[in-house]
Image 1 (cartoon, rainbow, N blue to C red):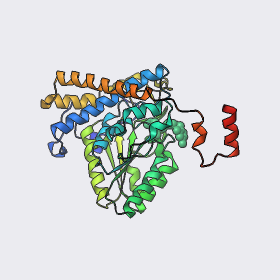
Image 2: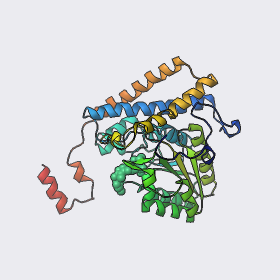
Image 3: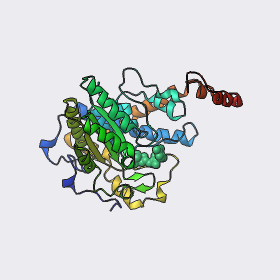
Image 4: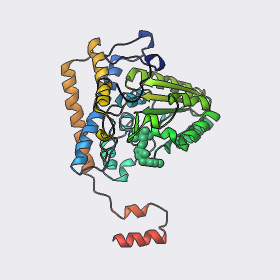
Length: 352
Ligand SMILES: Cc1ncc(C[n+]2csc(CCOP(=O)(O)OP(=O)(O)O)c2C)c(N)n1
């Protein structure tokens, strides 16, 4: 059994069990077979992205990066529920959601190789830049959502953060503000059970993270974060509610980070092997594939084709990113202020 207490099924919203069976057909959201295959495709793509990025980092071609393996359902299920005009506020582990929402993979590689120009979000993609500081994106998203409401724009704003972010003032301030102003915010906590080596049990004494929403005066939902249909459904409902002027929702995706916190981390130092094995049996990708195979909408040859396709796409993105001319070191100073300060000028001349 895992060290972190897994909520009883009845406490947590779930549609698909780990064997890929639908628990209650009435709960199943309206998704075509094509939608389901697309969601699966994004999940497999995200895992391949992780694998290739990890190898690149080990070869010195990428800087530190945070893998998302294990969290594909929580990101793909939620991002797939968004409409084109909705806005996304990502954290450093949100690569799957960002890719699904239209962030070019080559730009992401460029960014994670240390080139800030990779964070130039395309103009037609409603997304903010990645927040590396824990939780700072939450008040940004809450304020932005309020702005959308003031401008009478019917859009939802989704912000992603981890369980550790809920210990920060940013979480309280952002959610309190969103509650008071009924901002169209959907706050998604990907509770992956750890903040680097700190387990969830040391993060908060609350029984669930979702219950914290009660203090802010809106709904909180705990969902099985490894169940892509359940995540899709709760996010879609929350976004519809937000766009219709009925205020924010906090969603806790109960999931598990199967890999390391980042490429600089060794999780074997703080997690028992049995715990990881327990969660591997609940792998979100296996779960969806089992469902699709049972439904007769997925075959071995579909799987082989998909695996080959994602590998080519990710490798093409790497090639494209690596073909970009390296940034000039002076650029570190050039864009800090409109006019460089004396101190920056000195630092720049030392660098030269
Ligand atoms: C303000 C701030 N403090 C500390 C850190 C160092 N740090 C990076 S990730 C992390 C843990 C975050 O855990 P969680 O929010 O649960 O998200 P996860 O990384 O597990 O997805 C910490 C403490 C940081 N990035 N920002």
